[in-house]
Image 1 (cartoon, protein in one colour):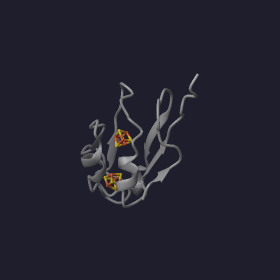
Image 2 (cartoon, rainbow, N blue to C red):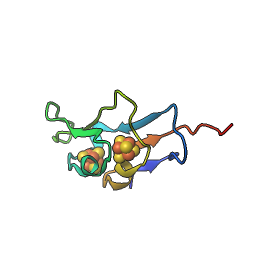
Image 3 (tube, rainbow, N blue to C red):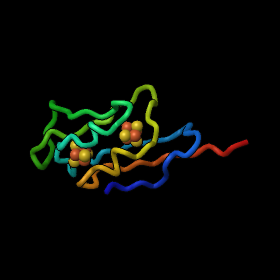
Image 4 (cartoon, rainbow, N blue to C red):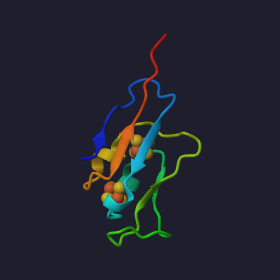
Length: 89
Ligand code: SF4
Ligand code: SF4
């Protein structure tokens, strides 16, 4: 299971959400399958220290839901998610 420090519950406004530790990834593609926003892909242009094409997170429009699906499904604990939750006014 991946590490989840904070998961969005209401409104996620400013965050550095997903970090994929490239050299822990074995390119299994599970995180690609579970992302509802299709923000993760296997990067066929790169090879990591283990010899795999690693997953890459690409989210130029901040579309990540902080759902943590990707981190929870990763068997190699390669994904970390950190979300900041906005206080309700
Ligand atoms: S936290 Fe959810 S929406 Fe964000 S990249 Fe992971 S699976 Fe996709
Ligand atoms: S689930 Fe984990 S090991 Fe598999 S591709 Fe995604 S980051 Fe890599």
